Image (cartoon, rainbow, N blue to C red; front, side, top):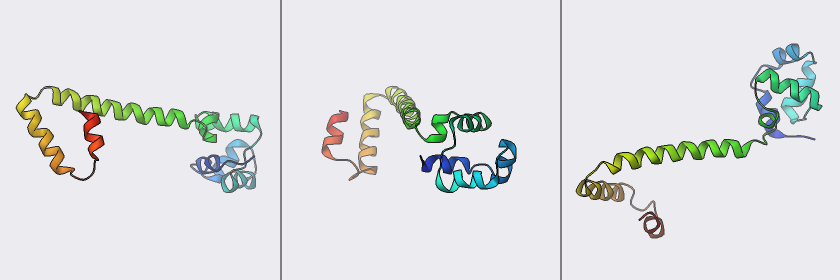
Length: 117
């Protein structure tokens, strides 16, 4: 079983130190980092503890968690923007809308602007 994400994430620490700390050979660590070969479950669990991450993180199977985190960040940014825009008068809001349309002209389709209204 191989996994490219696993190999790249293990490279975050020097191979020498990792090999020494994990009690394995440098060539074993090299195998993990260069080929993405995944070690036995007990070694994988030890690596996760060593790096203070989950085995899912090392294997790259936590992509849903990463995506959810990005969505939450985007949602909070939009909420903050909405809060600020909500404080504007109708006249100021129209002016802001006109400015944004002119600044980003051509970046959005007609369908994009209709669904936002």
